[in-house]
Amino acid sequence: MEVEQPVVYDEVKDKAVVDSKLLPPKLNNSINKIIIKEGYNSYELEHKQFCTKGGSYLGDLYEIDVKGVTKEGVKEINIFVKNIVQNEENLKILSIPNAYKTEMFAYKELYKVFNELQDEAAIPLQDRYKMVKSFEECNSEAIILENVARKDYKTVHRMDVISLNYAEVAFTAVSKISCTIIRNEGVETIVF
Image (cartoon, rainbow, N blue to C red; front, top):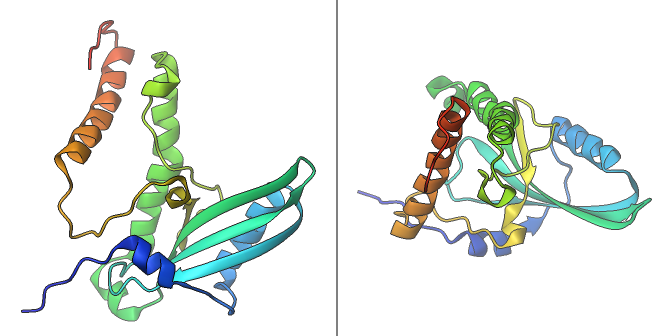
């Protein structure tokens, strides 16, 4: 029996190559909209596609860096994209576009609800539920997010067991959401 071996994200990232070919057309269009919305007068775009060795069967993964000049000065944005794989075999197993729509819902709509609840409950900024920034240009073929790996967040292999510390932090974050909802329903005192 063959068992999948963990792949260290940083090693995969370092082996990713700057792709000289164009991004998929719909993704390229979305990135161009982001560049316009961010107000770039001139820019350089670099993108890398990752070989995940089977670790991401629902999408091709890209790192896209936009460096340039806006009217405010020099600016750089780092983007992470999961772009749908057009693979007939995968489409027989599940609806990948529906999976993308569900994930997009969490990043775009559910996040707004969490923020509104936290605003209503007057939760201090440092105690709020944190979520990766998503771009409005997300669609049913591409999940477009801020690349938090550039802010020293770590991506671990999907088959690795999480640490106890990570589990505690994750449980606390989920608890904060529940407590925010309870607090908005009239309970005054909540202690973590």
